[in-house]
Image 1 (cartoon, rainbow, N blue to C red):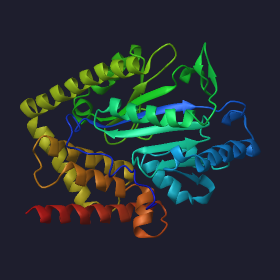
Image 2 (tube, rainbow, N blue to C red):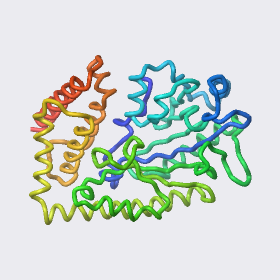
Image 3 (spheres, rainbow, N blue to C red):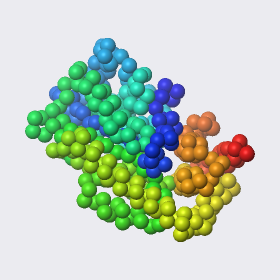
Image 4 (cartoon, rainbow, N blue to C red):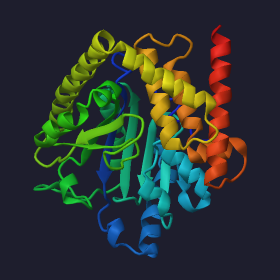
Length: 354
C-alpha cells in the first residue's frame, strides 16, 4: 500500500485547536454520470462501462493527469481492509469489487474517490481537526475539474441525482470524527445524542457503524442536503460541534476537579491491561488506548504523545497487524500478536521518554 499517501496515521495532526476532541474532518460529494445506470441497479457489465468511461476521461485529460485510478479487483482482501482501517473506503465498498475502483491524487494526499460505491463517484477529502471549510474547498475544486469532463446527472428541481433520495440536492456529506471520553465516563453521551435528534445530524461509529462503538470515537455528520447550500450545512454543523466541544471540555474539568482519583484509576487500569494482557481484541485495545489519549490530553501522562498512541491504534487494526507481521491469524493468534505488539511499543515509548 505504499502508493497511498493518505492514511489514518499521517493525515491526522494533533497540533490544531481542539484536535484532541475533533480528530478529523471529511467532505464527501456524491455524483452520478448521465446515461449510465446507477450502481445499485447496474449489472457487472454496466459497472465496468462506468469505470472504463471514467478511466478513459482521466487518462486523456491533462487537467486530471494527477489522478490515478486503481481497479478494486487488483487488490487482495487484506489491502482493501487496510484501506477501510485508513478510512479511505467504506466497509461496504471493500466487500464488493466487481466494476469498482478508487482514485487517488499524486498532488493532493488527502483526496480519495470511490468509483461505483453507492453512487458512480464518491469524492472524499479529509482534513485534520475541525477544518471542514478547508476540506470543502479542495472537494469543490476537484468536483469542478471532474465536472468539466464528466456529464453529471443533475436536475434543476432536485439538484444532483443520487442513489439515496436523502443525498439529493447538493449531495454533500460533511462529517467529523470526535473523541468524547469524558462524556462517556460521566454517562452524558446518551443524553447528548438524544438532544441531537432534531438537529439534522446523524451519529455513527468510527467506521460508519452503529453508535455502540469502541474507543469513545464518534462520527457526526449532516443528515440531509436537499434545499440547503454547502455553506449552510457547514455553518450549522460547526455551531453544533462547538457546543459538543464545550460539553466535553466541561466534562473533563469536572473529572479533574471532582473525580480525579477515579480518572487516574481508569487511566492506570488501561495502562496495566495494555502492558500485561496476553490477548486483546482490536475493540478492547482501542478502548484502552483512547483512555491513554485522555491521560495525555489532561497532562496526566507525560511519557506519551497523542500521535504515538494513534499510530499504535492504526497498527493494531486487524489488516495492519497482518501486514506488519506478514502472516494470517485465527482470532486467538491475532489477539496474542496484538497484545505483544502493544506491550512492546508502549514500553519502548516510555523508555525513550526517560
